[in-house]
Length: 143
Image (cartoon, rainbow, N blue to C red; front, top):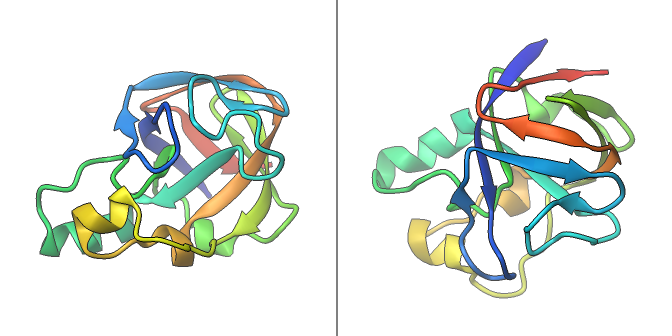
């Protein structure tokens, strides 16, 4: 199964909505350069299926990539098939799945914009094993 990246998003601080910047550098054991989660131990890069985001967008059409706090919005690659420890190739980088979903303690900017935040249920979080560039149109596939 091979998909593609349709948005590359980051935010300078936690709690802020991420913005699609088109391309970024993923740094080994750090995450996405310039993102609020840069340097986190196990949640360095977050991924979300575009197909799931589109379901919410039907109800709230003004949602943009990054509004769910995802770093990488993925199309044509089913993230729900991944398990902890799986590795995926994203552009030039290699990622390892470290967490599936998350617990939200407060209503973040994503929840306020969408009325729902799907990252706690459907988000995938990874650690950067090998860094490299990732951009809109980059491929994503299981290693």
